[in-house]
Image (tube, helix red, strand yellow):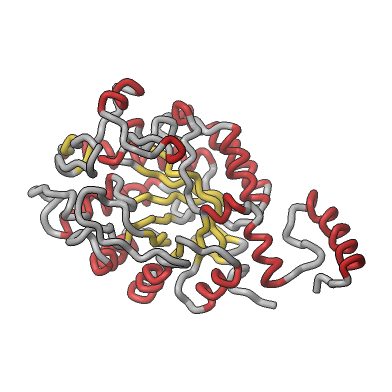
Length: 381
């Protein structure tokens, strides 16, 4: 049986064994920005679980750009080696691995979800790290409870672009296969894109072209720093979730320009800009963001990644088979079942020899299946 979900995909020189991607998921488990045993196990188990590509959580390009105080980072050369150990294990286990590079901007400084997720006060941020402040395009807070960010100067903007470049070079040294730029969910670049949060009157504000400027500068600079044979992903909030904010037509314009500077895949998400303005919610449901990936793919021809409440193999297969997207990203489903890709393969193709399982598991599962077939009277194929 030939399934779309388990067809390989080549993006530049990267050959993915299937279309399943593990989406970035914040862990808040990296004091000082350093990857550690948690990341080795957390990300490594997804490699053993059969995913084609695994992304780190949003990894800060600067200590200022952290979402939470214990976020992973690539702002120091000393961060490279711990990440290399994770990368090497994922490669040895048969998967590719990417790093999502991000800067939280005016949404820097919040507690983990299990501690309530609310914004830290400016005093709490300073106590954790005197360098840690909120910055953004304009002095407009992200919402109630968030302090007003420092409106960035031209020098501040240039520094952030350079921070993305330096983090990209470190990502290459660590051996990552993919860099994904996090331009969604209300973080720094999203706040520049939206007229709700960007009130600037210089070349980084005003018109849509002005508001897109920093996104294109970062993407262009990262593409130049990232090896030409390695692919570049970009996560976008196709709509930012605010009335009068960034919308689908804006995204199409931006995507076409991102393609021109060398972005290969658009990871289509939504929302997250603000908690303060009147919300424009995207109705939630199974696969609720798939139409964004479908529209971006159809209108621009770019390779797209669908994400959001994709929960089972048959749903994922239909998304790909219908041409709505090229890749399927799962997050919470992978936490619920780290072996989701291999279980999806079983559901769609049912291989009694467990061909794609790690050989240390394969032999035991074959024996298990023989007993199940014998004693339940239900053959595996």
